[in-house]
Image 1 (cartoon, rainbow, N blue to C red):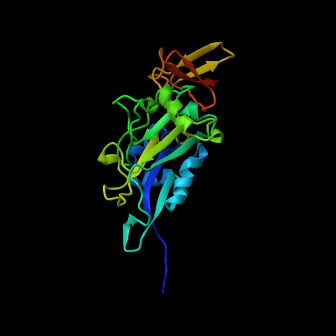
Image 2 (image 1 turned 30 degrees about the vertical axis):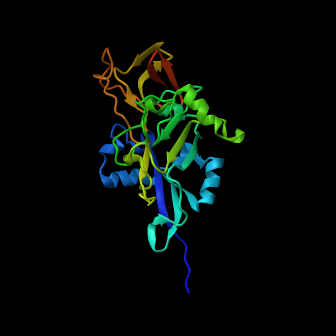
Image 3 (image 1 turned 90 degrees about the vertical axis):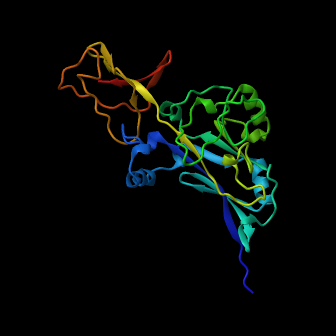
Length: 280
């Protein structure tokens, strides 16, 4: 008699970042499928984040025969299913089961190249269920085909943040950037992971960060002058943004002038504007 254990995909979370995936001013969203695949070949979330189940969730995964598996673009949760029906979990699971995952930032320059504002006592919450302490305008975690980038709207209140952090073990509470909190059934059917009968839907949720755009300030220390671009330019790891000396500055600069792209190391914020400084 043969015996095999079968696991099915319960859900997936895909994490993308336009700093790594855009090519200069060409956005990842506007690329052909072939070009997207090329960019994804060199992309790995480990470059800037660490995503792990909370200790409480780790125990739930064991109890319900689930497996956490990292991918280059996030993670997947697999669950043991019945041999006779691969959409039915081997162990019946409550539809209100909650699974949480910590997001911590590994790259100290993440804030420089990510188009978000950061608050000391607030975290980003990515969830399919609105906390009672959040307004009805609460932003739910997008799905893979949603054309939505992560914005400051996902930054929850200090009260919600405190409540969320309080559920963590003391060893987990430091340097939390965000939490992924998913119930098997969300506030609406679009966010469900299982049906009312507990059968697997296998949704793919998406966290897609945008790259920061900054005004580029060129500083000539020898001449004691500085000029800045009229509009903000994108920061990307790949490609080169061409600067037109006649149209990108006021007043226009000599047409034969050349201007390098900035690194993400030197960024300053003045009022609501972000500046990249390039010394020439």
